[in-house]
Amino acid sequence: MAGTLDGKVAVVTGGANGIGRASALRFAVEGASVAVLDLEEAPLQEIAEVIRADGSRVLPIALDLTDRPTVVDAFARIRGELGPVDVLLNNVGQTAREKITEFWRSEPETWDFVVNVSLMTTLMCSRQVVPDMRERKQGKIVSIASESPFAGDANIADYCAAKMGVVGFTRALARELAPFGVNVNAVAPGATNTRGPRRMPDDALARVVAQIPMGQMCEPEDIANAVAFLASDQARFVTGQTLFVNGGRVFH
Amino acid sequence: MPERAPSWEEHVPSGRLTGRRILITGAGSGIGRRTAQVFASEGAALALLDVNPQAVAEAAAEIGAATCPADVSDEAQVAEAVGQAAATLGGIDGVVNAAGITVTGLLGDTDFATWRRAMSINLDGTFLVCRACLPWLRQASAATIVNIASGQALLPGASLSAYAASKGGVLTLTRALAVELAPLIRVNAICPGIVDTPMARGAALAAAPDLSRYALRRMATPLEIAQSLLFLTGRESAFVTGVALAVDGGRTFH
Image (cartoon, rainbow over all chains, first blue to last red; front, side, top):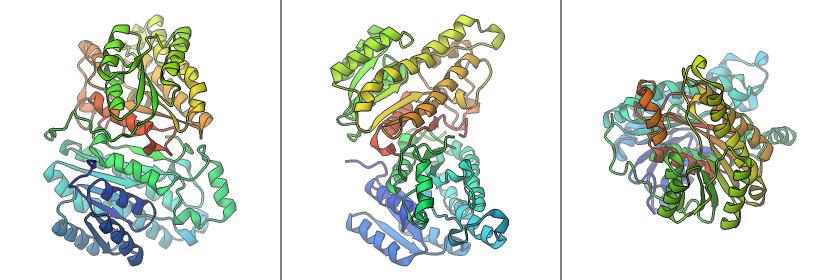
């Protein structure tokens, strides 16, 4: 069966685990060559093996996505080895994790980290691929936002600020790139069955799930499905949008 | 503008609706008719509903679907048509509410009959079809409703108040039903901008569409709307409910 991304080059940031991993696998199934970028070497090599074993082309690159010169080098390498990028998934991002706390207790150094990894990486990686996309008059940029800023979830104000930043960035870049036939969209997941929620205490997790009309957490593959839709030409008239995949917890 | 790819108006099916039994309203023309073609190619069994018996017969003949002509704003006709569709298909797993009309006019020029017409077809019609299908959707697995709202529901322009209000009602009904019917039935809305259909061309006779409001500077093709309806009807959107997906070439930035 023809894939929706046959012959395309796709990049996934934070692609070794969770949503990024499911999306990288899906891109490969749809026929793309996939560059997978992640800090964690072991799971990165594991997913590269899985994609390779399936007969698809994969380029795993271990790096710190907040280190800008390294990011520039990584995208130059992708261009050299796979060709110009057709699809970029800006997935990397995280809350303050063990440092999650009410805002009045939080530290500016923590905000810097959260905003850097959840928002600035999206700008930085997009900046690397946009010149080629403009030149070639084609391309899809999909960024992972979150339902949290729309819900106003407590104790992660820095993360909410960063993810709302992703939404604003998506809209502005969509308008800039529309004349070049490049689509820019975001996906806003709800609580997804990845390491983040699995780290939560059982009662806190149960409270989250109780707020979801669909009655369960999102699976990474649910997000990968939405990403694959937005990365395909079937969504070529969709741009500047934020697609919620959250079981109906928050409406926008 | 980028050059159009050779496959611009083609849909490449991949069996995404195999075994699904789906009712499409407004299937005689425009978005509804194109959606029927795409859904048929994806393996769905279809019942097509439209107020125009001849148009819906033609649409059904193209793809070998069942027909159930009805006026969506007439409670008795909807009940009969939906019953007929369910009997023919052996049940209903999904609904696409594409029946709708556009009315234009500044507030002072909008007579009450015009307002009522927009409300009765766009909003009453969506309510009546959803309610009539409910018993069958409850028996289905992974049931879906997708309503055609409008970008006007998110970001209204001038001279469309009756239409915008009716579509705003459709969007709010969508969200209310998403909460009420979860997790059994998913309910979502598409918010198109201007789409190249007979309805839009009719409205454009009065005033040329202002495409400068759309970042992509063009109308949507009916296929582009149909493919988003396919995403929200198929299993790939299994965790998506209550969304307003704007397929509008960058106007609302929703």
